[in-house]
Image (cartoon, rainbow, N blue to C red; front, side, top):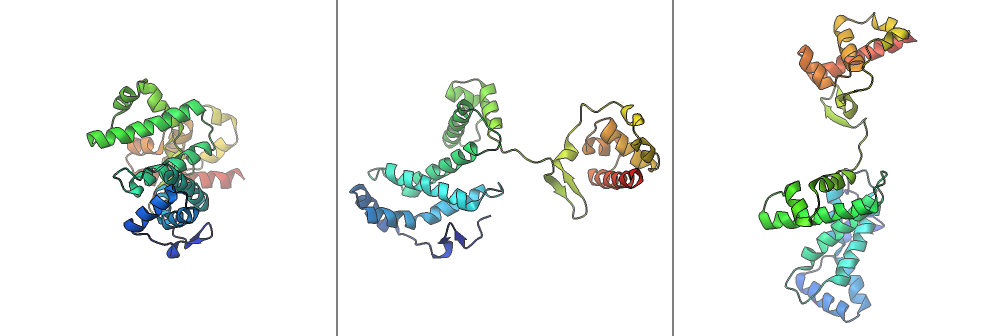
Length: 257
């Protein structure tokens, strides 16, 4: 995702690198109101923002937008960092940058989620991170719910609500010849009336299919089976079911025309 040399007009190959001593000196100047030191410190930590943005690859988000949001998180971290604490700035800054990007992604999700659920989800993520550090294992929904004093159902619902939606055309498997998509693994519980196809002319086209093609089409589209279920029932792989199904549908389309 972020393999581009330039992002937001910034050449990432030429980003400056500050030593720990330089960072400490600049932070002291920043606390004393030195604007030039603040600008230098921001530029010297843009690589930190870039490294965080790379964690959000695969979301089809504009990297320039994420980088800008990450810089906002960096600036907030600078303004709130306590130089008297015995901790590296990056240790404090990275969670701030991540949090800012996560808020941006939640607020700009195409599926609108209520503010209260988003707020709970944010608390859940914070609790999850805290409990993971304390117990050194992935906390359960029950543990998070207990920590926050809420019902476990609310925890699960809030996490589900902020998940990115995926397309039914999203590939989940590809063997270079045939791709299996999300829609191929979704069972149709509504269109299970075996007689409805008898009332349309397409049923005539189905009669010209091979026995295996008829079986797969019947199970997939008239009985609402997933490709995985069909594969198990007739004893072949899901990839084979997918290939035969696509061939049968193409045949039907040709005959139907």
